[in-house]
Image (cartoon, rainbow, N blue to C red; front, side):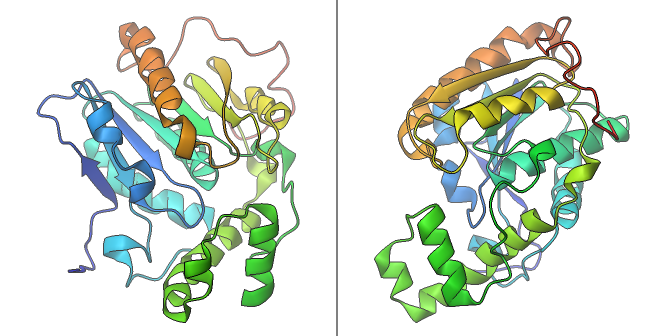
Length: 276
């Protein structure tokens, strides 16, 4: 497949001439744009889906993966900034949820338009810090064992094929290193409506932990538990997309504002958090 050093950072799915909303999607650690395959067609005719293409994967597989959240945020922020000419929203899954949250905060800090909605799936609330032991700096064999124990799901056909592992392993480890290096003490709030999705059978991040995202929601919060585990998109994509569409339609009267008139955050839920 042709590869370019200037390969796009986002893959535009099912391009629309006049989208009502753009939905920027960011995948979990080790994931790539195909995680959101088919979303563009399902969200027609008015929501245009742009799926992030991380380094060292797909069309960008010759690029060196980034190893800090800050660098990832900077790259995506720079790439999407020219495309904020219509109302937009974010969906981020696991690591992608943290990135979407930090991009939203960056937009607020620079006085730029905010998302109509921030959707986060299977991602740990930042103020809880690292919920699991660090594994990103383990030797390859120990890292893979830890991944299998925590998440499972790496196909045997990949594990047993050295050439595939040479492609798959470096970006996966880099993503874990980035997450584990993140400064959780610098967290703040998202100044736009937030909906968090939890997998009912997620053994990595139980739903009650994801409720803690409310502490980071300065403009309204909702949570929905859906069928599935940490990677619930494999079985609950339709549920998630219906909820995303419903939330964006309900917020259509606020297009361009990135705010809500009445949020659902508990009184005092934001206390103790810094750098909003």
